[in-house]
Image (tube, rainbow, N blue to C red; front, side, top):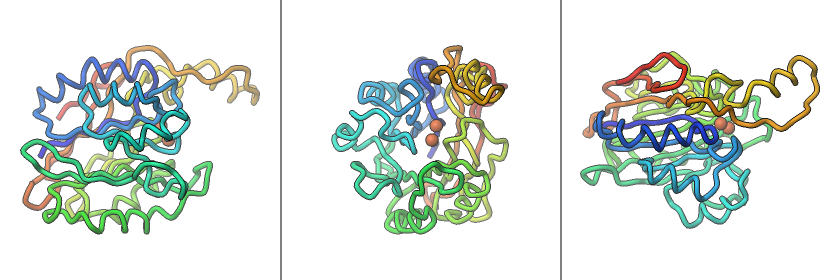
Length: 270
Ligand SMILES: [Fe+2]
Ligand SMILES: [Fe+2]
């Protein structure tokens, strides 16, 4: 199967890149299943129901969230009505929605998607991601109940993401990080057969500070004082993520390649 994962969609620029480019890329590359991280798609903070629909209509088969899952309050209700939107499995106990679900890809093949939050350097103390993902993956055996498993590791520390990659190795077709908004150059297949990349990067304007207009972040770094709210940068976005090809029989990755299309980043295609 051909899987495409795109990192955090950042504001209007990120949404525009998804609607303009995703349908064409899906067709050109023969993609069977697409996951898009949408936690920053609405003004950089959370995801409104309308913007969730926009990402789904553009071709996302599943939209994952993150620590900003419910910044847009309408998502609290919407997530209960839209099974294609997932929040982290180890979010607050009372959180609505689900963090793992099985989807149907092309030709009836089953794909399980899960999202897990890291603990290191995160603002809130989320539950242990290692035991949470272990439990979440247990019913979804690769090469058994499902043909592919995708794990979105939403975390700040590269070390924790790599550790979670190895923890899931052999149990997932792809383990990919989100949240830091900068793509890493370490796309690889781990020894157990899982495709892995520490961070997918964002779908946003890279002439920015992690997707935000540069002026206010620079001011805060330089003076230690804030003056305005952060707003997403509005220049052309780069679609950033990772492409993985898998063997349906085993569910393991046979090929992995970084994806960077449009905007300022050096292009990369599978
Ligand atoms: Fe993010
Ligand atoms: Fe995040």
